[in-house]
Amino acid sequence: MAFDFNLKLFLIKIILIFVFIIQFKVFASSKLDCNEKAFYVKDVMSDAKHKDLTIAKSKAEEKGRLIAFNQLLNRLTLRKQIKNSYKIDLNKMINFIKINNEANSTNRFVGSFDFCFNRDEVVQFFKKENLNFAEVFSLPISIFPIYEGPSGYIYLDEKDLWYKLWKDFLNSNDSLLKFKLSAGNLSLKRSIKGEEVLKSNKNVLKKIIRNDLTKRILVVILQPKLARNGKYQLKISGKLYNEIGEFDQTIFSKVRNYENFKSVTNLNKNILLKDINELIYVFEESWKKNNFFKEGLITFVDIYIPIQKSKDWSNSLNLLSNLPYMKKIDVIGLKGDVGKVSLAFQGTNNTFFNILNEKGYKLKQVNDEFILIKK
Image (cartoon, rainbow, N blue to C red; front, side, top):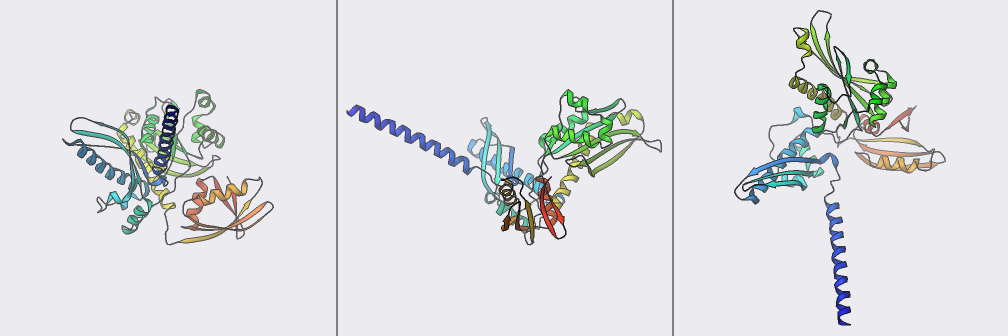
């Protein structure tokens, strides 16, 4: 009997320990969940040397904090506003640090870190330093590199320099704009023509967008050409199109002059990388300006929500409540096939419309009323 009792007691202890471990893991997972994704900086590599490895690790973390904070500034603020240095307590600004990988020798520590910044603390810092900032991510945007070379149009080719440069750049890109490099099988490649892409053929552009599962497409064009004045030129441009393949705007355009045909077709990797960085820089800064956080400005707007399916009402309310900058949602009425809500949000109408647009919705204005429509 004593043996049976002790066995049961032992099993109960094992079960309790197992439950505790599960609860601990769940708690730890939720604790390390960075809710403000715009303030989460991942995969920061840092290293430090010291004969005491504990000190080396601490120094690597300290160095990583500074790297992560600079990345955060570049992501959320206008880069021309950033100073070379700030007097700040980074420990106060960070909720937690996650170590992804680590390695060490006798006197060196190398680690990959994730940093979750405290939004309230960072926003206070932005206010103190008079830094404008945005925190709204875009929906995925296709990047479609195309090279119009002497032998024709080259696109979706892993061996093409222009395509490879974009692939390398996007692998390390960290911004509010979510880019996705276009990719496709041989069947897709055969079904589109480079000339149609350059001529803004809506059906071709829509086909690429559907294949990439994105909402817009940025066609980035590299063209060696002979200008009317007889000079050889290399033109780089970026043209943005909406979800249905309609032209939106030219993001970037730049021309370089060369002495002869050979020099214009002998592509320089470093120069092209600078142009890619400049093109994306222009796009990012424009995006931030259109989505600035406006703390002191509260805008009110009434919106009608059409109800065609049973879940339309709940889905729309869920969409609106999860939008950045949303302060308050009041239901004015609900009847049959339409509901009406009153919204209060931080920022201008333009900011709100941009956020909705990136979520796949738009507001249709009829007289003085607005109707929420899925694009």
